Length: 388
Ligand code: UD1
Ligand code: UDP
Picture (tube, rainbow, N blue to C red):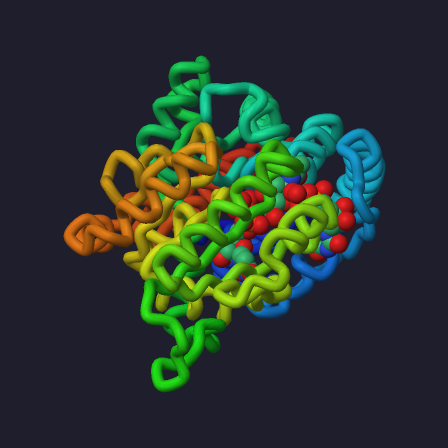
């Protein structure tokens, strides 16, 4: 890294997936002489974010506290916008990094834009093609793309989406997804403890299945029907299901009444990342509406059924590691049972190469930021005046 004055970069995290995907970027910045990362945690998530930051050993410099129980998007946006605006004004910063498509990411990008700071968007260019699905994330990610100076696309299709929307090719870097950098870091240090029963203590003859559910557009009747489909699959094949429950009351309200006392379903609190990845790596199958889990499962050779109508991560589906099954409970039941009954199909899904990255995404992001921030610094009036 070049330059004697380090690039002071504000890194904004608010929810569990942002912590996962920005932890390797922060780590890389801390190890690089040319960067001074300042991490702001908005607290959009409270316990789940703290759990993740602590598991991934990310130090927080500025702690906000915006979460409210059952927060609505208006209140959340307003608290984030005001408080992040104040953090940005407390600079100086050379750039602001946001990740993905949460309300924290949108408000972080907006605060930077209002302050005239360049925005680096990590995991740029994901598109489902439907503005309301996922809600409100598809809108958030499109808005962040309008605000960003650097678009770090995880895959070529994501980069192509940006080009189609008129983002200049020179502003796009295809880096791989930082989720893989993080997973490799975790695997290198040793995974945690699986939530499945140890081999000797197994009471079930069927497959081990991980389930996660949380998306806003699935909450309510759709999520209840998905939970019933999970129960049916577990009963039909004597499966052992682990379902770490998101802390959102809107999720708990519908999942617990259906699966809370089910003998084949172990509901846990959100698992520590090390324990979650240990659990995932031992699963035969994962049923999920999560974005991050869609990327981690193929990285750990676990077949995925995506419980959503659309996905902005078509790479895993195209590669054959995942199937988009929708949210109709009959479709979910059929897809899961057909797959469980077809060991050849399960094996083929497991053997697909991970399409999401090679573990060097953070290095590519830093290289580009360093180059452009060094060039920008050399154009500042004081640098120009100091030239012989
Ligand atoms: C948010 C993101 C979503 C992301 C998800 C990751 C938005 C609009 N949505 O959705 O893109 O996939 O995080 O999980 O940014 N809660 C707690 N403790 C926690 C976390 C949440 O109690 O640690 C409860 C609170 O009552 C909160 C509710 O969950 O009001 C919902 O949290 P929120 O961040 O608004 O939405 P998510 O569905 O988690
Ligand atoms: N995760 C975790 N513990 C759990 C469930 C999920 O650490 O009990 C991790 C998971 O490995 C992934 C991230 O949380 O990296 C995904 O978060 P979530 O599904 O909440 O959000 P999304 O990725 O859909 O935005």
